[in-house]
Image 1 (cartoon, rainbow, N blue to C red):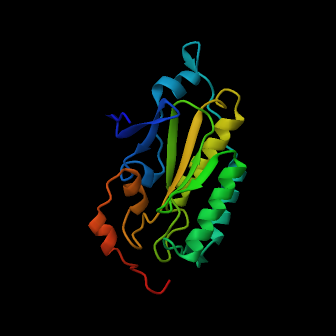
Image 2: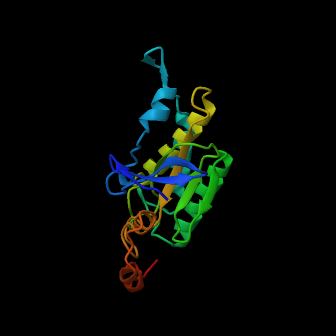
Length: 207
């Protein structure tokens, strides 16, 4: 595996091609931002020296998903969905199903990270955040980044100018620290410490 960094990106190899595989989570993923590879996506959106119109999202579909995700663990004006609780796993299963409906290759890894990978080969961009919450956390905290990532992937796939581009989506596990802060993204970036993992305990005994 050949790796290098640029603008905080981590490059890896998938199907024999170099792709953008991740961004340091505390820089970008926690805020639902995305990194675009200029050599592929930007060129696909350029036309006669200018820029083609960007794909349009489906705002009703976006809001429907955000509002449905809010119902899983809803409490007052917020959400109670601590990492690895029944409601957290219900939300992750729902997200896997939505990714499959979007024709993404949906998987959950060994630490609970949920991925929706584009079936297209070549360079990809990975967008995401988290869907676990603090006790009575904000209903858009983390979820906004995940669902926006999903909507971007769907919108790119539905636009003929961008349908060939690969957009992957991620939902990291335990970003809020029920057991260990940023567990999933640290695992993805290969920065987990075994001793810390062995000492990890549920900090919310009541859930």
